[in-house]
Amino acid sequence: SLTGWTRFLPDEPEAAGNIPTFSVIQGTGNDSGYFYLFGGYRNSNAIPTVRRYAFKPVNPIGIINTTEIPQDFKLYQNYPNPFNPSTTINFGLPKASHVKLFVTDAVGREITVLVNEFKNAGVHTVNFDGSKFSSGIYFYSIIADGFRETRKMLLVK
Image 1: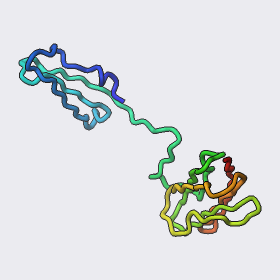
Image 2 (image 1 turned 90 degrees about the horizontal axis):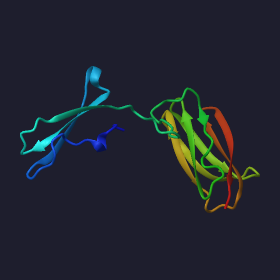
Image 3 (image 1 turned 180 degrees about the vertical axis):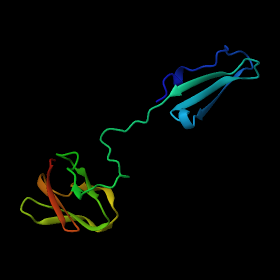
């Protein structure tokens, strides 16, 4: 965010016929971490005001950066868990591979296949809708290029 952005007004009081105008320019080179905000009034002889604001990129918490390629195959824990009626499952592939991601019930019967196709390297997201299933413990498994992992999830209605 830009500190002071909403408080900025040109230094000249607004008068009849004076219309506030603003421009924002991002710095370059050594100034690339700054925005410059120029402000003034149209139809005015006042000297425009210039303010400089620093900004810092922010990484949201809880978001998986899908542009990164994982170093290893990975099956992440679903979220939310417990869930009702749907949950999100993420998996990471260090290289392009055929992937099978499926859900089994507590006794090991396959109840649905979420993914059964070739996927590029990266982190992928799949949603599981459990609205047609009863409450209980379920397992989700991934098989990809010789890698196999299973995790537990809990559907609570």
